[in-house]
Length: 314
Length: 280
Image 1 (cartoon, one colour):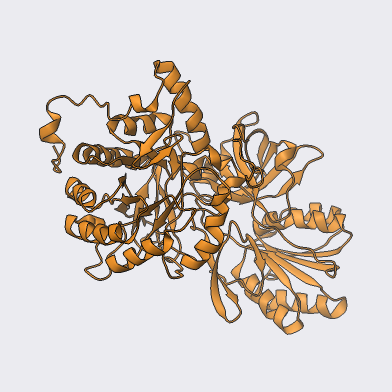
Image 2 (tube, chains in turn red, brown; image 1 turned 135 degrees about the vertical axis):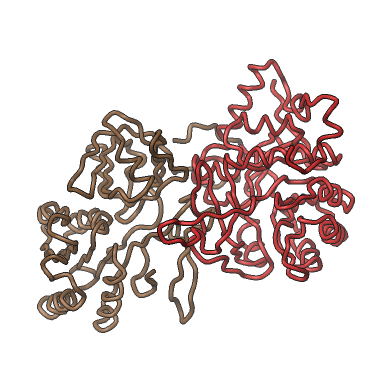
């Protein structure tokens, strides 16, 4: 019997495959049975209603995409009234992604979303801190620690900190989140990027810049997931460019306890269901009986200790 | 197609009903110098379509063309009786260039049908279609449904030149009165089309208008609709990523109750009330 289960702090997931925030919603239930998934992760919500960024909000680049959606949200009350009840029909745990412009507002939102039906909170601290200089909380260890501490005091639910690749202090930010009480790290959000139409000379996104996601981004996110897994003892959830089971396995070997699949769902809406089947096939073919036999098994040798934490081009 | 197991869960929401199917290409031929028609062999489960709906197409990657995202495309025709799904398209970018390379016998994966299609309300007996360019492809299935419902149909088809007027014979076969207008002949400008429509309204009346493919025609029909109290619908476009309603990429603004609301073209649309629509 294959054991696909994995543990993220207090939560046991029946398999390590879950969606990435922003690439998943109730509509996917029209395509496959969402209870196949290890967990459900909602699009980020804010307390207030928000419209999001101007269009175009998406463009493709070679083998990947850029987006600048801008966190449109129907607000907390609409979320509690409509979205939580929808997911309560499923057995998979519901992880709610939240965002706010200040540490105090993050903390208040944590309290207000800690309601029955919510199994964990993913905190999207890759969003701008509007009380400081607009840089994302997770770009720096100090702002990461400050916001995580306030949220830790505001809820008993597991807190998953979603980190940003737009930092030069990956391991310091990861350690700050852990020190402030994060239960897990999601590594990572999209990488700030740009594309320009050379005919019109206009940026291809309405918001000028946006986040890179998809296969081209995978090696960067994998490197960060590896660095984080090496530097903290809380679970790391790998996220970034995963579009095959081999990609997911790479993250598990790098030290991730589970993975989130995002952009790939846009290309193949049933991909997460297929990856769970492919995972079983892979384990059987390798003569393994548990996903846990893969996690953190990277053969990085003695040199790793000195190299892992460097953030300069070699 | 969903071939995955279902879990045991007595409370589970309705079963999945959308299909992502690798269809066999029957033909993929040019219809004029700009447009091509793709005919797919499609299973019955994806042919319960409504006029105005679309499919999300997984365009093939080749050495020359490397589309990454899927491309949404409105349905040109769906024929459950012969198991066919038709698309009419113009090669404008990477995705459509990739589609142009499809050969008979190739597999082409399509997700759908998606979105909300056109309405034909019981009181809408005399219908007017006003289409420009490839917008006609979107309105063609509506013409067929209008015929099946026994509605009276007039179609004003606008294009750059007579060569780019497509489907006129098809529309005539469906019993539509077809009025071609073109830039080349100087009959497609707003004033001329306005006079044409005002004439139709005065002579025999129009209960509802439908359009697709032109901002200019949208504004004209909004204007005429307000003046004569004639309802209408429009099929809109927007860049999409998921096509299902998850990603929030394809929003557009709409005028509703004195404010601008944002809706997803893939989910709340692509068909919208003509008075609420805002051109781009």
